[in-house]
Length: 121
Image 1 (tube, rainbow, N blue to C red):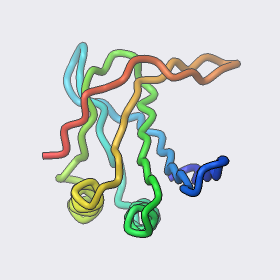
Image 2 (image 1 turned 135 degrees about the vertical axis):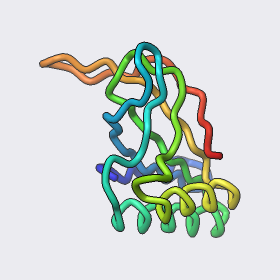
Image 3 (image 1 turned 180 degrees about the vertical axis):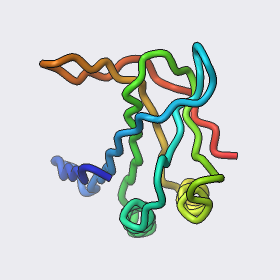
């Protein structure tokens, strides 16, 4: 994960968001953004932390930014890091929200594009 964002507004709840960049794509043409392109222990740790945030009654969101505009789906890659994929599925079942967006990357900007369908199975 690249960032951990916290927001504590005027309400009693805290919102915590883990932000991860994903650049790997499977399929030719419109395809699926995939995580992870390498084994990660840090990503697993951050997802477990988000699970604790949700268990404490706050909002936890795992946001995947896929740096490809030609994708329509996001899913984990079991072949590369099955342990991290299992962790992602487990924390989603525990209430961590999982969202993914295509991004538009230029030399001077990084913008969220369209929302992607998330397939965790």
